Image 1 (spheres, rainbow, N blue to C red):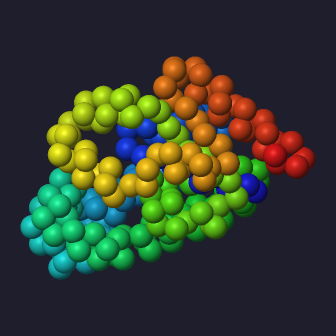
Image 2 (tube, helix red, strand yellow):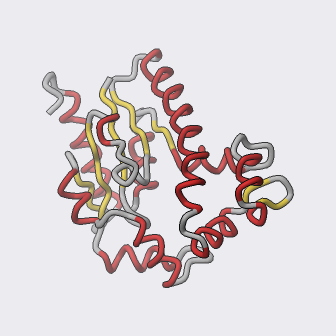
Length: 199
C-alpha cells in the first residue's frame, strides 16, 4: 500500500482535494476532523487542555477560536498543545492505516496540514502538495468566518512557505484553475501510482 501525505498551506484547496481522492475510493484520513473530535465534549484532549489553557474550554469542549487567541498571546503554548494533541492524532492514523491495509487498499491518503512543519515526511511514501497563487489563497482565507488579515498573517507565519513545500513535493496539485482541473491532476497521480513501478 502506498501512503500519500497530502498537505498544503491554509486556503490552498486541500480539503476539497482530499474529497476528490475519497470520491475515487481512496481511504482518506482527515487530521483536522480528528482534532475536532478530540476537542469536542468528552474528547480525549479536553482534560489536558483544560489544565493547560482553562480559558479555552467552554461547556466541556475546546473552543478553537479561544485556543488560537491564547496561542497568539502566548506563543510558547503552541508546542505544549502540540505535545498533547499530535500523539493522539498519530495513534488514530496508525489505526486508520492498519484498517486500510487490511481491507486491501492499494493507496491511502493522510491529510496532514503541517506535514513538513512537524517533520512527518519520512512517514509517507509520496507527498502531494496542494497549491494556488498567493492572491487566490488570501482571497479564499479571508472569506472564512472569523478570519482577519492579522489572524491570517499569524497562521501563515507558522507555516512553511508554499514555494518550499512545492519544491519538496512529489506531486503538486494546482487548484487555481477549476475543480475539474484539480480532479484531472488527482486522476493523473492515481494513474501513475497504479503502474507497476508506482512512478
